[in-house]
Length: 265
Image 1 (tube, rainbow, N blue to C red):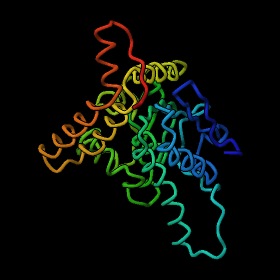
Image 2 (image 1 turned 60 degrees about the horizontal axis):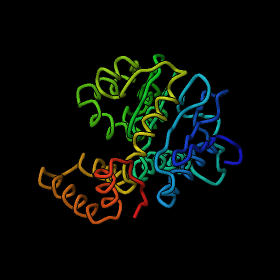
Image 3 (image 1 turned 90 degrees about the vertical axis):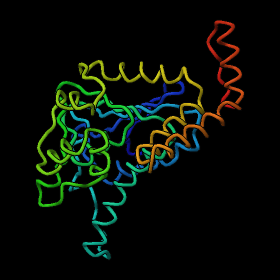
């Protein structure tokens, strides 16, 4: 983080994380990925941060892998070198899903390869009109399924649309992404951050533990083995939350016609 490959801006309980390599279209070099991995893996211990907004500086969200940004280890074989890079980037997407804070992405311009996967790993996505996303890997002789794309994309847009884009590497436009439910809304570039902050502000109106467990249930139930499994997770969460002091506060605030004051307890 000392190289400022990402910048972090605090808005109270909201943090805005910006990819900060605009001269390289925010392409992923090793310092950028190390900074993102450090940030997202520490979030479970930073519950004072309740919502994260992910964005990119400049005219691109993230143009994918920076092939010049990964110094070679002279003692490592080619397979070991690529494996290290692969796992390091993939771990960022996994950390984004595991962190209890909702992640709102706002993206403009190119979002290619790993940049596309950063969007897929987010909880909510807002798009600028010029957003163009693709799983570029198949265009360079690799498989089209990488960085979680084969897991996230079919669950977000369905198997047919996912196959269309993963098997070709072609670009998905903002309008297409909106039509198939991949993004929540297309807004002018200059309004992206304000849109994300407004949604984050709505999330802050909820009880802290309730918000965290809602993301948890969404993550678990998208792969639920059955309807019964999904209901079981929801039932347990609701019983747990009903015993918190914040639920008592919410009930009192409702009858007193005032906003609740959350204590996260």
